[in-house]
Image (spheres, rainbow, N blue to C red):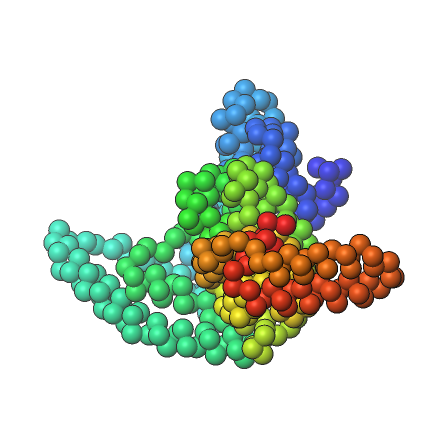
Length: 418
């Protein structure tokens, strides 16, 4: 394994290697070779639980493989716990030094240092339960109802606190989602300590629930980011750029298993993760109304291909005032067809789609004046040979200004079709 990772025996995970192996496993199932390398690496750095899980999966794929059998022998063979000894009722105070203590969770000894405080040993008495559990059940039910009532009472204050923390740029409380779950009477999901699941399983969830596709993709990237930064609760030291590279590979792996109409949700998920966690820089630092880009809510946030970050409520209002012309209000450049589709697809962009339909219904042909202006515009464009194309740009701006006054024209549909 030293030849593979270069850090054998160091106890430090090679996150780049782990990411590549997980990607290979998701792209080329069953990927027995990649799974073996992953198990070897997990064993070398002491991630025995993850190694055991992957070794069991290998056992189901290749039940007669000798390497897999050797992995399981190594992982299942644990040192015997120490023989029980009578412990003294107390140990006199004062430093004693390093002692070895059996850790039943990891199946090995660990070092610890006794302090000057007295250490007391006593066996805890066994808990005795009587046959009548109804009072305890009633107490539990009433206590849970009281907890939900308190959660509903404090949730509004927590939301206000979160808004103030976000505006002040301080670390936001992570308890809001938990309190909302308790108030709604839902069970909190178990915290996953292992690596993310396969990309195909995430793609399957997206296909099964297309209405929640973006949320599923965001949750998967958040889980991947957490695992990359703190596998098993231990910091890996990965930089934001390294995390982004892992997320891009993960998103591509999920995209490869999705139909074309659902691939965009992986891009949207990465867009939100970069905004909220990876400190991405944009062309603009403020919205059109002067708010900071970092304060834009996820439901309103969108980034166009020219790297402008938008509060879509503000952008939709600006485009509506501009008679539906899909132009960047800040740079004055036209949006790309991909941006036009993305804006119209967003829930906040529905009014623009309705505006296009309304314009189409009002359209009853092309005015003669419009045809004359188009001929003049075409003549200027053909004859303009200047280096800066200033006459052409001036003619186009004049024509667009005229078009903005024509209610019977459908600028939004023409621009989006280009």
